[in-house]
Length: 185
Image (cartoon, rainbow, N blue to C red; front, side, top):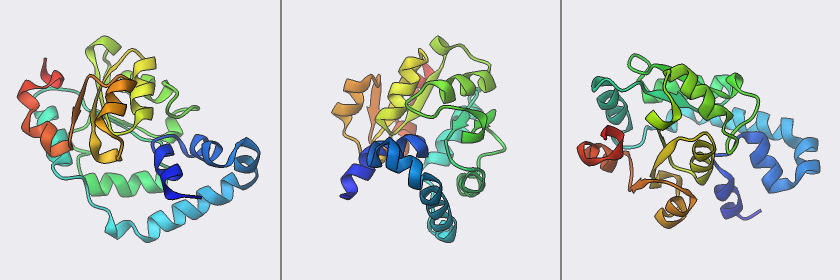
């Protein structure tokens, strides 16, 4: 399979990603094995992971300004443990939603609803920051505006067309423009 097919599906939960790439029948047949191999490879190469430039600073700045930051991922527990260590913001986030907390994954809005519950905020008072079209779809279905960053490899036009209210090159650009962003309006 060409890598672009895989890349276009990233951001969906693993089950939905496999169904998109392989079809429902093949995904069901080899899904557990594929997830296990992915997890093993992920953990074996975890020392190579680095946070996106200024991503931890952005989270700390938002929390420092009194915003309740909730992280949402479909990562498996062992992968989430690695991600939390790499990002190193547990001390300032209001909560974390993982794949274990929800039945359905993005683009379904259930992870966004779970994040809203953890944050204790209403959809109209919340902004989702993500880097995939699936983030925008999930948030929009939950009535939450989305700010997107291009680190997911998806173009600004696609993210805007999907419903993102603003698009930034990366977390560093969002941090640099934070005072003028919808995150603080």
